[in-house]
Image (cartoon, rainbow, N blue to C red; front, side):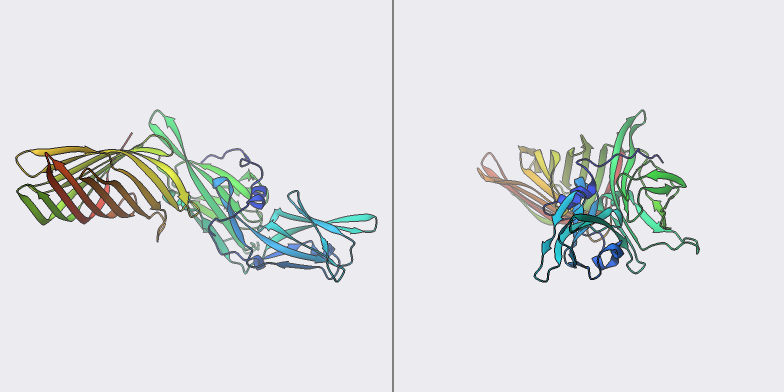
Length: 434
């Protein structure tokens, strides 16, 4: 295991980004309510001061497309003063005078413990002013909340709370994690390391990692760079919490992949002097080669096992296009061409085509590290030719099921040839390379 030196996330403090997010829309990784926090330092405020949360104001923001953090809005009313302000991370809200003569205001704060939530109440009485700093502390019921991002699922990242000694009194725990895989070249090929960003509520500026001190990137945010290993990593906080971190990444990352699939299909072929309508096995092959973090070269072949067979081979560039629902859905564009072969006479009739397509993948659908994918290649009817190929796939990189529909219309020397095929196949990896 190796640790990177603390390096702040781009574009300023993550808590400043959290407060400035104009439209927070990240999914909640855990259920969090403001009432599970309390303010410390309120004893320095005037008697009768009221601090109330808006319980429906909790929002989650994804920081620089990485970890998600929560925020919420509170209302504070201070009697017996002549004015004042509320300030957090250099964002200041002036108090307003109510009909009763007290001063009140609302402000959005990070819903986290410690310095990240430091709220300063400035109170004016006559010529003097007084600053009262307040800090949040989580108290909620002793529950441990752990939210591991979808980005960690392929690498089997898990946190297990470790029993602590009876002498310590650990606070209720909130832990959030986000992952990115980092690739580096070596003599043995592409090597992997895991960039793990961890938020540990109230941990402050330091934690222990296998007994060694690690400084925070920002308050309660820690960044680890992890390499393949089998032993768990022990994380300990000054608040008395301890966790075992486990993960699984390969020692080598392969750019290339080849897979196979097989299953029964209802197969129809209409051609001159040939009419086929039967159940036949269909063999499928899949291949891809990673060109960059967002682009792959992909290929496929589907061949019906029949004396009047049909074969379809495609070559495409597959690129990330857009991410939806807080990065849970990835949409890819697929641009390229395909080659089709129709065996219905003495010769194999061949034809090139250029149906273009897309694929949309819902990550962690129903279960971690399982994905639901819908995709299609389409060539609309033009000059008597058409091509429709759609699929729904569910599973993991090691085993998946696929429902596929294929409809093709073509012509050779003025004679129409039609293929319809629909069925279910089971797919699995055959080899990884480079």
